[in-house]
Image (cartoon, rainbow, N blue to C red):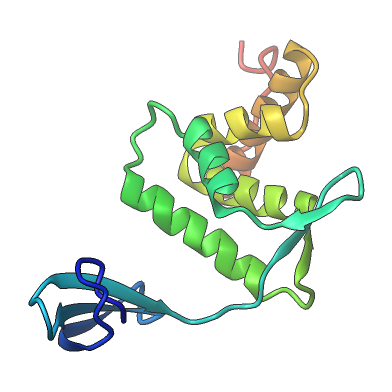
Length: 166
């Protein structure tokens, strides 16, 4: 590796350790000419993912775009940045296992919504409101009603209508 300080091409590896569950390697290096120490990362070269948008355009997958959408949904929620990073990594890994390297945007959105539903319902509704293009309060109410029905089913508690509970 080229030293960032003096430009020398000769260095030695001081320390090497796996990161990101063994999918990357972090190496500490020292320039043999000037002694400057620096860090490099090696990652597996993965197939470049492409996203097919709703309008038919195909563009390169942008991790930062996915990250920003998830961060906005989780804003002021009790989820820390490390959990968000893991969340994004899981979505990318799931997309990487698809048969094609061209992933429809709706598939990515669906994967995000399914994961958000299990992590934080408020973030799920925030994300769904943008992704599903909610038009009015009724759209919100429908999603909230569906969440409550699914929650009741998962607890094996019969849902009572407001009139039946009086």
